Length: 117
Image 1 (cartoon, rainbow, N blue to C red):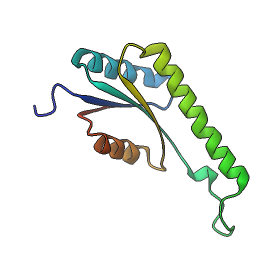
Image 2 (tube, rainbow, N blue to C red):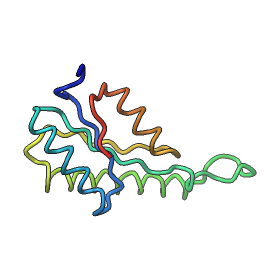
Image 3 (cartoon, rainbow, N blue to C red):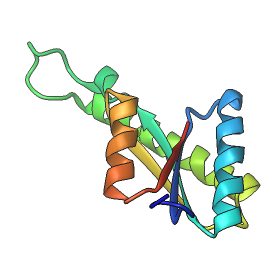
Image 4 (cartoon, rainbow, N blue to C red):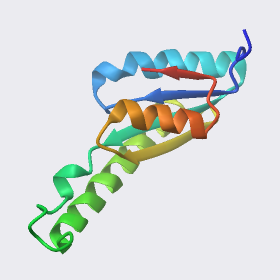
């Protein structure tokens, strides 16, 4: 296989307990092959957009979006520190209305060899 052993492994998480199996599998693969692990969380920006009849996003919506991003960043960093401290890990919070597309775009941009979900 052209992309094995992997050098970059992307794992997507919705920050739920259910996504831990994917994180564990990706961490095992990254550790076994000395790969960099990209821990990715995608959040939907649409709840923070003003209706089209309004002119531009409101300050409250911008602040809410910033809080969601900061919360995701904090959660990813806590996860990295608690469970993935021994690995080479990058955390990424992505704002996109289609999680699958966002993960695929990140994998392509980061030249990932493997995506784990």
